[in-house]
Figure 1 (spheres, rainbow, N blue to C red):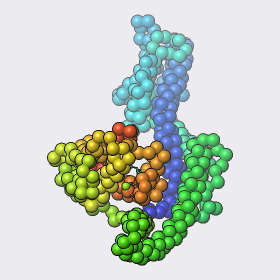
Figure 2: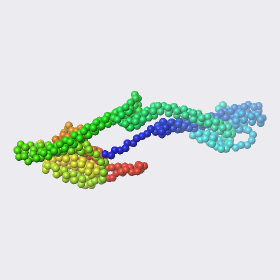
Figure 3: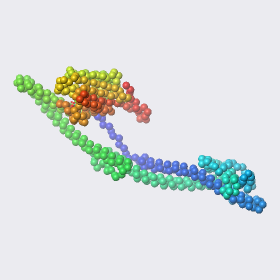
Figure 4: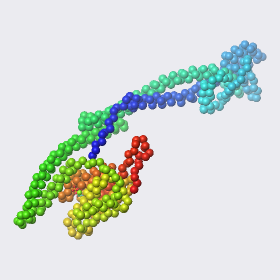
Length: 495
Ligand SMILES: Nc1ncnc2c1ncn2[C@@H]1O[C@H](COP(=O)(O)OP(=O)(O)OP(=O)(O)O)[C@@H](O)[C@H]1O
Ligand SMILES: [Mg+2]
């Protein structure tokens, strides 16, 4: 197997880390909130300011009415108008409309506004209109008189003082907003930092450190007492790291044991080979007792040597990554059957029911080994059954296959005795599944390893007294494309 270089991560810099992002986002969102509050408040400020002017103008108009004969000197009139900050005041009572006060000089009303039923969106656009207009406008304003001196009061005034007041108010609000957003952002940042960012940093730092030396037990995270998601993540990580560390330890031990076993197997095989050579000569001895026992001795030695060779091969085996190609499965199954049939008894038939045209994306040699292992197991089980009980029907083994989307599904069935219950649990583990006499217990372990290297799976679909069925799934290889072409990445060939 080719080792893949693990991807290691460094701790991010201040601004790229979670803290920096949280700080930036809180400032942006609080500012956004302040802008949303600013719009209605500046609109409201303008309306209240104008209503103030209307109230003053009404009082001025009432004062003018109270003058003897309602005649005012021009000086007094302009003083009253200036005090109220307006140019013209007119009052409407019932049907009659009266110009209560008017300053000297000519002016034109550039825009007029009715405060009696202003919609909120109009109020906002009017406020922005007042602030952004470049000209010095005279505006007319209508409203209900606040002191009930009539049905309608209408005034005209210069807009400039209003605009200045609005800018002063806006700047105050802006300064307040900046102060508030910094304060709120700071508070939210501190809270999030404490609740989320710091524990996340602790987790990531621990992961990085643990990744550098997973065998060091002191690097396993010590989970805190938190009950939230971070607490769960810490505890899960603790569990995973503990398991990984102990698995690594176990693996090291097993590797050492495996090395020992390989050496023993190697020497033992050499000794047995010598014994085999000697025992071969025994068949020439004519003594009937020797003639009876010599073949058994020789076949026992053969099995022992075969067993040791298999063990050595497995210990050394470094499977290369599969060299995948599109294969016509029917022809491949035929090849497997031809080599297996030679070894099978005449009472066993192997059927190739794979439909022509079914393709599989796999390494040819690997797939042949997998299918040979499975059919050989079936042959051995059937032969064993037939040797034990003569009355069994003829053995049948079937190789079937189909395409399911981008996956090739292969089935190997037989009408044999089924797999003994005690080996079913550890069927795909090396050396642990041999229930058959003379079996090493490696065939299925190797088959599973080869299939998984293709990203596929092998499992026992059913196994009863009426037969056994193994199912192999092999997905098509995902075509590697250049990074960035996300849309095309799932390309696979179709059968
Ligand atoms: N089709 C089958 N029918 C009945 N039993 C089976 C079948 N396939 C596997 N087994 C059982 O599962 C066991 C494990 O099979 P596996 O191929 O892993 O090892 P093995 O055949 O014993 O040894 P090896 O294949 O390494 O020579 C077998 O010993 C056998 O008892
Ligand atoms: Mg086998």
